[in-house]
Length: 332
Image (cartoon, rainbow, N blue to C red; front, side):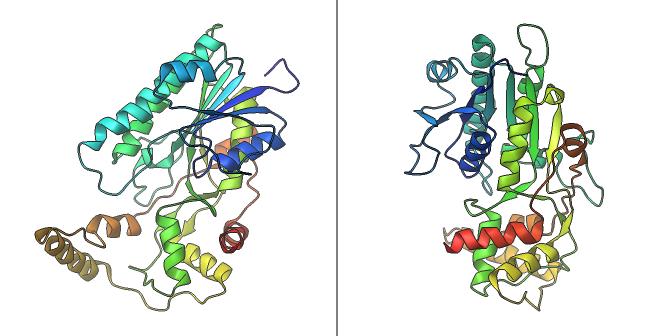
């Protein structure tokens, strides 16, 4: 796609949870890299050849300056999902996830960049409810995060270069895990490591995961492959996993046996509701909410074969090897 033997790539959100993996993957793929983020990288986070700029994707001047001379962009900077965000947070989600994407695309077009790759999420689909979803499935985003990511996707897919050809590629990531990842899987891992976790329900609900190093490799393909322009791809490890299988893989990597007991869904949901109401009544934040229970038992099954077929993406990490490496790195 590029004329140069070593194209120049701008990576926004480079210091985030996935950012260093993406930077290293693109470095290994022999791209020149400019990292752009609001936070200063820690020592050794990036290879020495990486150029580092500090800035905000909502700052048009900073983004246009960062875009100078680049051939392509990997746009990861975003406000991520949080549980139960207050209504006032919607404006912040829209400003960063939608407005920031529009700013990046506008600057990329002005700079003559040939590709903008957006990191999106399979959360734009909503629950799969027993089906297996693919890129043609309807989108039903339920959270501020997923809703604003879907808006950002449209900005990317509508973008055109000077030649009128599509400029953007959307990567809808499965639940990303790895040693730097925060959120549900970090909490689950820590709870299992301390023997402080009791599953809820039968554990047969499905999840769609991808290891962070495989995400980096998918980005390297999407930024340069001619067939990626104007397309949407789910990025997964190529399999669907039950929650039981995920817990077993984490426990195996920890050297522990998985929990034997589980709690029934309906009584647990009712009890958590009482705790939630009681906590609110006395001005406390409840330690667990009904929304957390509902998310835990949710079925999310997404097909990741299209990127494998069209871009020759081959995931290198299955559930076992991915969690073994994650736990090794966490312990280190």
